[in-house]
Length: 115
Image (cartoon, rainbow, N blue to C red; front, side, top):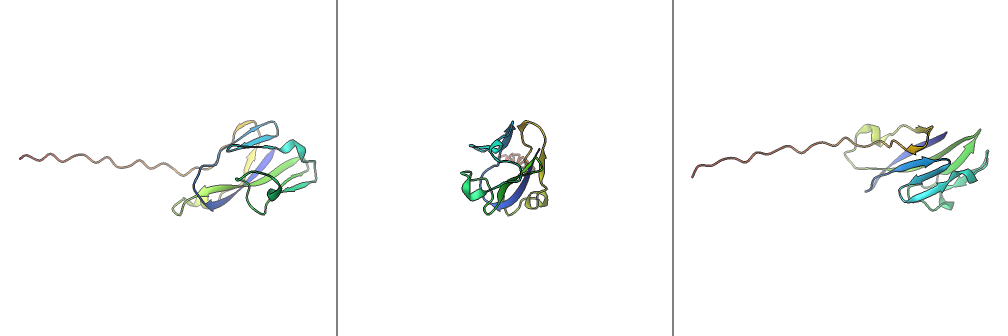
């Protein structure tokens, strides 16, 4: 299992992630988490991945991996994105990242004018 904590950051972009074994693909970056032994931590500054939250660590404790990723938000993002819950990733495949709901633009009908 991997626990992914999300840190809301005012930034452009869309966070995507997927897991295969202990390889976590975040955006274009692949993190091989199998290299981290139980009881150890790796500073985010020692890993090349723009999505890792600064001043955070990747760690394995009692077999559970955990890390913190930046979650892009805007000033009008909903509360659940500004204060996101940690994600417990239990299986391979795409990771379900919180997304702001898409609001459809109103349809404006043209006005007919008789001249």
